[in-house]
Image (cartoon, rainbow, N blue to C red; front, side, top):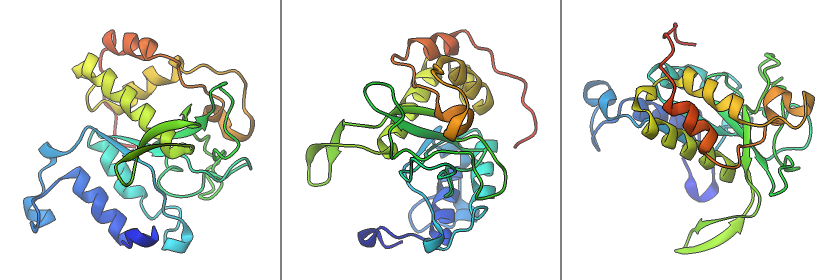
Length: 229
């Protein structure tokens, strides 16, 4: 991974995802020393692996499915290739096993840059993103020790990761129950429009307060676990 050039590779990304599933000590052996008990609960991913980095649409799919099967909630920023259709195209945002997040502005409108579905890169026609969240005029920390205002789905994804963290804190019985958590999130996101360029989820508006999903989380009981998907 060449960070100064903002370039990665499938092998590096797979190494990172494997570490998240079963962290191991520095200079340790991932197969011998990996410990799933040390895995995080939630992963926020504000990156993608486009073809120029060597990724085909399915390159990272088994790894992301393994994370989900392990009970990790995988949040993925949808990308900034909008407003055209089928611009959610790079791993890992296009996967069913990832919860993909588009961006809205302060008025609640989907940001023009926010990538849309349906997903055609893998032939699935999958509706993506799964939800949208604030991603325009977001003030946050910036390299060099200061603060800055920016826009992008990389700013939207952390909002959703934070809501999931609050939900799991409010009801620890939900920790690791990715499917049930998604079921609670979906109804609390308002839908001002239908269908369209983003499939079912791109028109969702992020709930303006965490009250609704938190109420749902507190009253939820874990759903029966099915086979990993």
